[in-house]
Image (cartoon, rainbow, N blue to C red; front, top):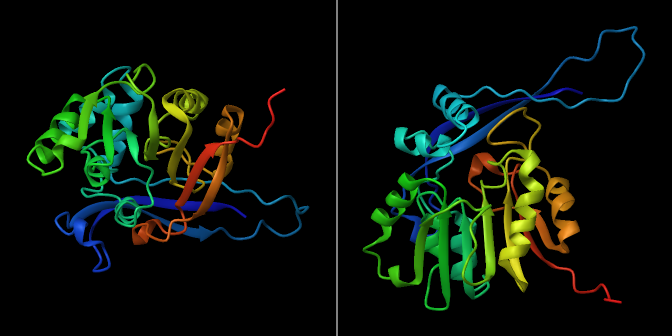
Length: 273
């Protein structure tokens, strides 16, 4: 079976079930994937194993974003922010992060959001019991995050830094790292380095939370396709095991079924000889 997908970014109003804290952010960009099944292979041929392939049809601004990121050896993401080519930016906090924060289900202490962009999730998690660092390689993104959040009442509980996740060395380790649309933005060949940095920055008893998206079969990127096994392949050698991996029921509607929520911790069951 050949699986083809059409991937586009379209504006959508937030549903009435969105947590109250997200109400000010009424417009977001969402990725939608439409699937179709090709016709069976022509009759008379010997049956072969089913194949899954993918093709992506992007709107013009997404093609422009991809071109900037993949052809600019440096500054590609900065150029995207300068030109407003940020289709990954929801324009509001991620619903599940709001839910986890409001229900007390997020680890306390120090938290890191790599590729924080406009910083909505950083602000959503920040409180007197949790200090959050938002990291982004784009100076424009960091300026925007600071501008949007500087007057908020919890501004003393978060900070934004322009830095490269792969070369930055924090002064202190983190109790929580939250990754959403960062893992899928880096080239697949860099994922092992991503896992090494997560291990390096996270306390031994810390927690990694991942929203795995887009789970699909499209070709190319960013965003590059991901799967649970992609995360396991790079996290298991670093000693991480999944505590929970479930479908993200709080995903925005068009991403449901293509987004999984994962919580990861170091595997402490292995004895040290």
